[in-house]
Figure 1: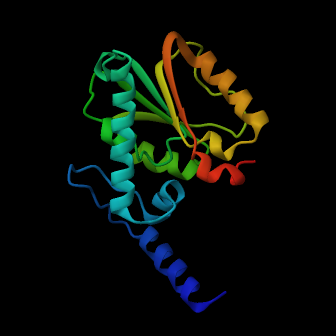
Figure 2: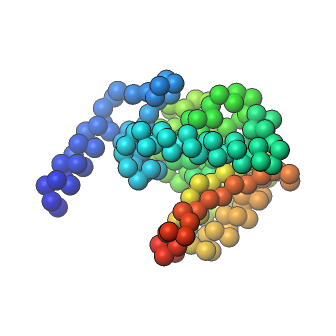
Length: 184
């Protein structure tokens, strides 16, 4: 392994092992670089925060286009939440019960410990989730389906439909045409 890459890994590991928790400008804890990298493809904190802010704006604006106010919702699920990149920007909606689920146990453990405005749980690569039928008014999944086979995409769509309320809204994004050759 080249020395430059080895040094980057050592630096990242040592930062992850520190017991200090840094916060953003709103006082919300920032995850360690390894968890940021897992969800953002970079350990750049500014990019992590900006991407999450833009995601939260998309969540709220998509509903608004449908004539629905985010604050009018009872329960929302971030499917594939990672370490709360988007959820952290929705914390001020105190009347909305926020939930996050992800396959990454380490991301969920960190989120559960540091982001006390939401409830978190893990899911497996295959459905089902731990949620009861018709649990959520709104479910969003940013670029989760990009990483799944077609078979898993169909299984997860069926599961998301099961846990979505009858008049609920579902927002699913993928990486788009630029990544079409990389989708399994």
